[in-house]
Image (cartoon, rainbow, N blue to C red):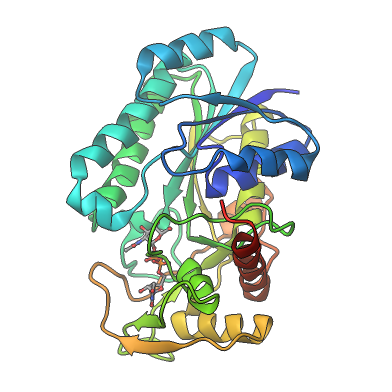
Length: 340
Ligand code: UD1
């Protein structure tokens, strides 16, 4: 079985994908620099999978070290590249930090493998901005990014498109995630936000456990059924499984071209207020929340058309909003008793 390198392997989506790769029988090497994750995730992965994960601590911007590592591992045939900075607000404050890290790491990986590798790239529905047509399909126009972070995703997709045109040995699948939430059913791995969570679900769970004050609903005057903004929330375990499907598609030479793009969502939108209600209903916890102003840069509503993913990747999200909320809550409670 091929060996897969997972960059950002101790991060939120990386760690869940590592579990699904193990489950599918792959050999895996995790790579991380712990700039936004914890070493303890390795122990957690060992508990979940019963195997000691192979791991390398490396900053992908360090080209010489990365090249040496890749030379020592000719058995790696696929890379799932999660490692990137992802805080939208911070990217506005420190754009060069984002452009430097997110581009150098991507370019260094392609060069290190001499363009001969199957690569899965973590992209985002942020590339669509506010789509004109919903649910949004992969061929919808890419809109001007609202933040340097969003721009790194757009430009990275262009870098990959241009490179694939002239390098037939390089196979790439870009996965455009909608809103990944939830945690592994074991509650041993999940999202570990640094400081005050900017994303809705970690803020909800931290508020419910007493770490934060009330949840603010950012905007109640949107043109949506209940006035709050609508997103396509997707369970991180479903998302992780799609990465295995993407690797398999490239290995089995099923790609229609050497650069492909897929939406990863449930195909269903939920409003902020619906998420709050789902959290309360599934956990039995009462949430303290208030209505606030819209957040700058937010789109009104977006959810994905996932027909292409289901037809070509053979993948479909299976877990619903209730499972997203109950697993996120179980993880928050685990963290309270077992701080990282
Ligand atoms: C954000 C990023 C997006 C990134 C995605 C994945 C922005 C503008 N976009 O998406 O680029 O790919 O995360 O992690 O940050 N909300 C509240 N109260 C809160 C927090 C959020 O009402 O305390 C609302 C937001 O206004 C939004 C929804 O909840 O309508 C989801 O927000 P969030 O979880 O931050 O994700 P996105 O903004 O959709």
